[in-house]
Image (cartoon, rainbow, N blue to C red; front, side):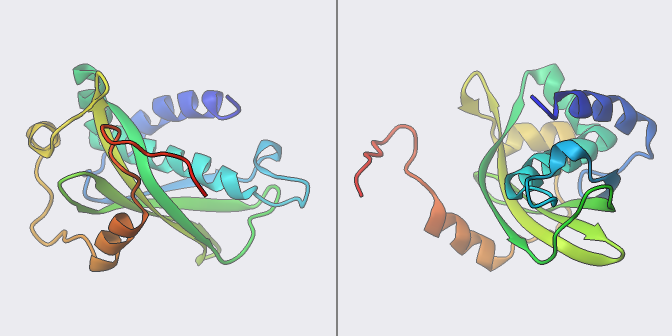
Length: 180
């Protein structure tokens, strides 16, 4: 809820920014706000993922993909994500969220996102996302028909294939019992 207003503002302001290809890179300037920090006075580890949502929205809006998705009733969902921290972003610090699609497989679109300040990477995340409609995945063929095909040189790095295989939970159509 704390990012709802910020997200709504972004959906409006991103339309005013220069258009991008979905296969390009979004660079979105931000500043660390009091609602982003924890008791240690730096961006809370969980907040990084929430802020990175804004970067993906910016890319989708500026590429025109967001309007096409919403017209179809498609919703984006995160399927798998991981992050590595290098430095802490602190209160009022200016930074950018750099966002790009780095590959696609039969199940997901993969984003690389970076928090960058002063020309240095502070955090980097990999996020696998899907589009769903009425609780069912949208196929790549349907997505590509709306937003275009990825460039031929956009090949998902092998380590992300392994990451997905090693970290995926069972399908929702299969049991996933809890047992330590």
